[in-house]
Image (tube, rainbow, N blue to C red):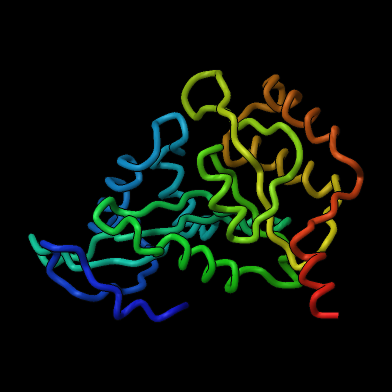
Length: 229
């Protein structure tokens, strides 16, 4: 990861440096403070149940890490910015990315995403996925992610509705198979969103995947390969 030691804290915070920490224990103050920021930054219908996240941490299926600062109040660590990601057969999914309001505008989220992509993307794990609401599409495109060209909705965690999102991918390959996208979307619906197999939202979502061609070009990787000869 990059060296963040020279990033200053905002006024009123005790430490002038940030430390990169990995959260491993849900039974900790650091986890409770993560839950507070998580609830603050995401609407309830986009939030996976905290119990599910805690179980994922313990089972090694979900990971939370990021930049922390020393609280001026009690000198314990708190979150300046974090990434929460999951691992799947088709690669890594960036599940959540958030920054403490006092640290916004410093490029922390951008650096965390870049560092995580460098760490996780490999020929063995050639796809890095994320879901993003429309207001964030420009940000992820600027980071070199490709938005898959189909209508994508995620199920609400509470209730029966759906929320419009975009499904983005970054890859070491310049082509992605429709079958790979299908597998990822199906896995997200069944595992991440815990939908029953007969939930009509699965059938509707997978039907949208079939609107894609069998092979989808990933323009960014194709352009990079052309530049490199």
